[in-house]
Structure formats: structure tokens, C-alpha cells
Image 1 (cartoon, chains in turn orange, brown):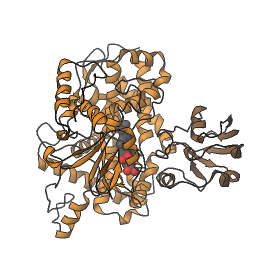
Image 2 (cartoon, each protein chain N blue to C red; image 1 turned 180 degrees about the vertical axis):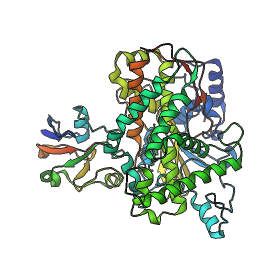
Image 3 (cartoon, chains in turn red, cyan; image 1 turned 60 degrees about the horizontal axis):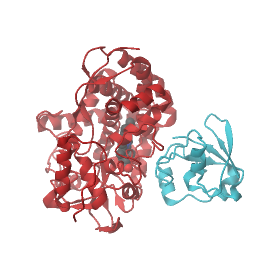
Length: 449
Length: 103
Ligand code: HEM
């Protein structure tokens, strides 16, 4: 199909315009929206812009992707329909779009023990199991086991603690000097929260950040784990630490940290090694770089959009709405993956049973059919809470209110302290097609209020 | 018709509602705190959770399947829990009373 290339929704640099033209010139069937290097460059936007218009339910075949055959849902309505139909779109064993056939392991990643033939097969079939990659009824049991950790009453109790920490972090920042916002603020605040949620020693909080970073990246030069051995060792370390925490919490009075909740859940004695590991990973990663990247994104987007920044500074009541708009615009997790349980008709196509389907939240959030002027960052838009970034349906983000709480507090504390935050150059964006965020961002705070 | 929302701080607010609206929409329209309606009324986010007063339970009907699944994954669920986006206002519900749960 050939369609004239529409005008770009926003102003583009010459390089961006060229990249966009290239994407529009490619044969439609060759488009592989999961291609990892389009995320740090921002080119993903035009792939999805084109697919939403020309082929909203898009099949990528083996020959066009290192991720194998998969379907992409790119329009809001189709994504929401799939996310809310867990009977047709199963989450079992899936989270991100992975490369097919992971390297077969014959030893347990958890403790180095030799696996039986059966265990190897089981693992390959199921992948790592977690609340996020389970269907009912298991899903309810695993989610129910830990949900109280972020229940409204617990969040109310956390608020003063988060505020005190946010204040201390901000008061410690240098004035008139360049520094990395990601490291000094975004990671610091979220790591402290994470340590509290796990009731893990605060002085060791950066270990949690390290584990989370290793788990969400492949081993390689310049990555959190430079080699496969380092990668495997970190994962084993994390698992052993979590297993130990659950073990020791069992003999203690129940508390509301995630590990104690897991330990005292009447079901958890039946959780397998893989499930305990999977749940811990989701609780670790789920709340970590998502929130971190939203904090960084808010500073970046406001610096890019001076009018929006002026609105916020004139009216701090816009903080909650700015937070929601930032979560939409950033879309910290680009997608979730499901598998069809039967042939499914959606958007005029039939997806055969057993195929992988990618729900591209990052595309649905830019769908003009649902969000007016979707490519613009507007902090006082009409329905800022309507976005896909937390997913919908039974897997909807368990920690969404906690994420918003941290964002609201850090901004309340920032606005009273700093009249201005200047972003220096462009942030360094993370690699990969799942976590959309920033490795570092240099800023200067010229003065205090 | 009128609807009374008991808020999380135990005060209550009575508002006028047009028949044919979703109860969630009535709440959002009147800025009732604790009712967000993030998914737009599709029983997909559980941010409009309410407890229906006992005398109104029959009149407001049964939970839908998706609503049931969402409530199974939500905080503070009781027998009289409903997602207010799945309740449509009508003259028969004049005087309806619900308590906001919050999420
Ligand atoms: C801006 C920040 C965040 C974003 C964008 C985000 C995004 C998401 C998304 C997209 C899902 C899957 C939804 C689906 O499959 O339909 C999810 C699930 C989840 N999130 Fe978050 N998240 C954030 C913060 C947090 C925080 C702070 C926590 C804290 C613990 C957390 C814990 C979880 C858990 C446990 C799940 C699995 C829920 C389930 O499968 O039932 N998230 N999140």
C-alpha cells in the first residue's frame, strides 16, 4: 500500500525529517516496530504514526525481526480491548517481547544446581513466572499476596517519609554547577522508596537499583553487567537475597513490606522457586526505573516546553495533571506482550491462535483518535489521567498511585526551592525496546528561591 | 434525580444527576474526590470503586464479568463493592447512596 506521507505533527530537525522519510519509504511489511535502536533515537514515533494510519494491526514475520513473528497493536482502542480481555489474550509466561528460543540452560540460575531434563523443559516452556505473567486464577493469588504493600492506607503512611527524603535530596544538590539529575535525584528517591517497600537496609539501597538495572538489560560492554558471568551472578545474588528475606520474615511478626507479605501469605508455601523469583523481580523492576524515568522525563519535557513550565510555576495546583501528562508522554514501559488463546478478529484482521501480540502503549498514547494533539506535551489537557501507560484490565499497574505520589511530592518540594532547572545538552537515552528512559541527564540549578 | 456520595473523610455530598449517565461520570463531573475514572468507564482500572448502600444493592444490579475480575485484583473489596462506571443512573435510582472507597 502506498499512501502520501502526511505532514509531521511537530517540527522536525533535518535528521529527524530524513529518518521519517526513510520509514515512510520502507515496504510496509518490513516494518519491525520492536527494533531496539529506534527507541533511543526517537524514530519509533514515525513507525507507529505510519502503522496507526496504514496498518494498525500489523504482522511482523520472522524474516523481518530478530524477535521472530509477532503482531503489533498500535491504536488505543485495540490495545485497550486486548488488555481487558484476558481470556483471548493470555499473559501466561510473557512480559516483554523476547528473542525466540533463549539460550538453553542446564544449571539453575538461582543456585548453580544442575537441573533435571524435566526442569529444563518446564523452564523453557513457562519462562520466569510472576504475577505479571500469569492468568487467573493464579494471578489473583500472587497479586493478592503483596497488594497491601501499596494499599491506600500504607501510601498515606509513606507520604511524610517520601517528602522528608525528597527535601533532603534537593537540599543537597549543588547550585550553579552541572550534575547528573538521573543519578542524584531520580535514582536516589526511587531507590529509597524501593528499600522501604522491601524493608531492605537503606544503606544498601543502590544494590536494589543495580539488580534492577541488570535484570532489564542484556550483558555487554557499557551495560550495567559487562559480561554474562557478571549478569548471572547478579541475578543469583538477587534471588538468594530475596529467598533469604522471605525465609527470615516467616519467623517474624507480619509486617507490610513486600517480602513479609509474601512470607505470610497462606499461599506462598506453594509458590515455586521460579514464581518467587518472578514476583520479586516484578516488584523490584516494576516500581524502579518506571518512576525514575518519569521523574527525569518531567524535568526534561518542562525544559523543552517553556510555556508549560510557566503554567506550572504560575499554578502549582497543576502538579497532579502535569504528572499524569508526563506519564503519558514518557510511557516508561513501551509495551506488554500477550498470546492469543484462539483465533481473534481485531481491527479487521484475524490473529491466529497461539501468536504473540504486542500491546504498544507507547503508540496508543499518541493516537489522535483518542488523545487530542497527542504529540504535544500539554500539562493542563482535558483528561490527563486517560493514558495507557499503566495498562488496563487485571494486570493494571499495582503501584500506579505510589508512582504518582512520588512524582507529586518531588515536584511540590522542587517548586518551593528552585525557580529554574536548566537541562544542559540532550539526555542520554536508554537502549532497548521495553524500558523507555534516560541513562543520564546533565542539569544546572542556577539559584535557590 | 439525586445521588449521595459518602467521601473517604466520612462527610457526604448530594449531587444532581442526569438519568442515563454512568455513576462514575456523575462523580467525575462533580469532582468527587477518590473517583478518577482513568479508563473512561470500561471497568478496566478500578479507580471508581464504591460500596453501595444495602438498600440500593438490588436496584443497582449485578457485577459484570470484567468488573468481577477487576474487583478480584483491587484493594478493600466487600460484598457491596461495585465499579461505579458499571452503574447507570435512572429515575429508579433517585436517592441512591454510595460510599467512595478510593484506590
Ligand atoms: C510511572 C511509573 C510506572 C509505570 C509507567 C508502570 C507501568 C506498568 C505497566 C504497563 C504494567 C502492566 C500493565 C498491564 O499488563 O496491563 C504494570 C504492572 C505492575 N506494576 Fe507498574 N508501573 C509504574 C510504577 C510502579 C510502581 C511504583 C510499582 C510499585 C511496586 C509498580 C508495580 C507493578 C506491579 C506489581 C505490576 C504487576 C501487576 C499485575 O500483573 O497484576 N509499578 N506497571
